[in-house]
Length: 385
Figure 1 (cartoon, rainbow, N blue to C red):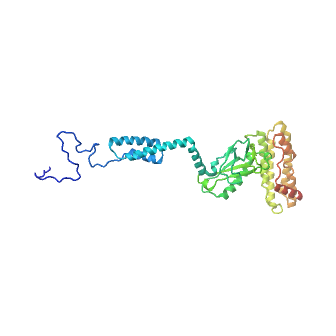
Figure 2: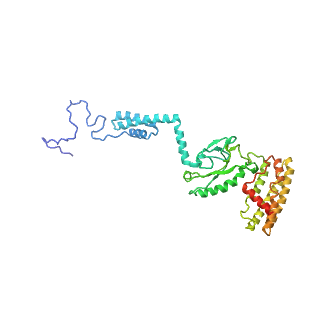
Figure 3: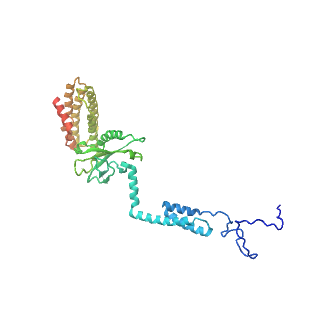
C-alpha cells in the first residue's frame, strides 16, 4: 500500500528529467520512451558489424567481407539509432582500398613471388628441393655456398646432377662438422649405386653435396643432397651420368654389381704400409679373398647371353688366380712376402679378361685413369715387387 503525499506539497523537480510538454489530451507523443523506442537514459549500444568492418578494413583481411559488413552496419545504424557510424564508414573505405590493393597484387603476380621468397628464406638450402636424378644449374657455383638452383634437362649442359638424397634424423642441430662427416661417408658410398659403371665416369667429375644449415634446420631441413659435378670444364656436365637398373639391362647390372663389390673391398686398403702394420694388411687381404669368392660364384651362377659366356668364364678363371694370391698374402709371414703376393693379385684386377667381358656386355671398356696419388702408389708397389 502506498501513501499519497499531502495536498499542497509538490515533489521536487528532477533537474535531469526530460522537459514536460503540454499537449492536448490524446495527442500522439513519445510518452516515456525516446524516438527509437528506447527509454530515456538507456546507454546507446555500438553496432557489432561496424566494429567487425573496421577490424577487417584495418587488417586488409578479406576486404570484400569488410565492405559488405560496413554497408550492412550503416543500414542497421540508420534504423536502430545505434552508435558506430564512423567505424562502419572507416571500415567500408579501408575495405575498398584493400580490394583495390589485392587486385593490383594478383594481376602482377607479386603475391606468388612474395610467397616463394618467404618459403625459400624459411627453408634455406632445402628450398632447392632437389631429388635423385635432377640436373640443375647453380648461379653461385658448386664450390661456394649454394642457396638457389635452376632445374634444367639432363640432356644439355648443367652444373650438377643429384645421385642420392640422405635424410638425417631429427633432434638438435648436430653441427656443420658432424653433417660433413655424414655426407662424406654416405655420398661416396652411394655414388656407385647411381653410376654403377665406374669405367664410364669421366675422370674430372667430382662428388659435391648440399647440407642443411643451422637456420634451415629450424624449419625441418634434414636432407644431404649428393651431387656429381665438374668444375674444371666450362660447360660443366653434359648428358646424364645415370647408369643403374633404370637404364641398364639385367646382365649389365649383374656384372657391375660383382665388379663394384670387389672395388669396394679394394678401396678399404689400410692407410699404413705393410712394414708399418702387417696385421692390418693381412686382415684386409683375407676380406678381399672372401669378396672374390662371392664375385666368382655370382659370375658363374648368372645365365649370360651367348656372346658373353666365354669372356665372363675367362674372367672368373682370372679371379680364381687372384683369389689364390690374396689368400697367400693374408697368411704372409713378413712384409716382403706380403707385397709379392699383393702385386701378383692386383695383376689380375681389371686386366685383359675384364676388358673383353665388358665389351661383350656393351659396357665401357677403357679402364679409368689413375689419379696422381694412385699412380705414385702403384709405382712404389711395383718397385717393391
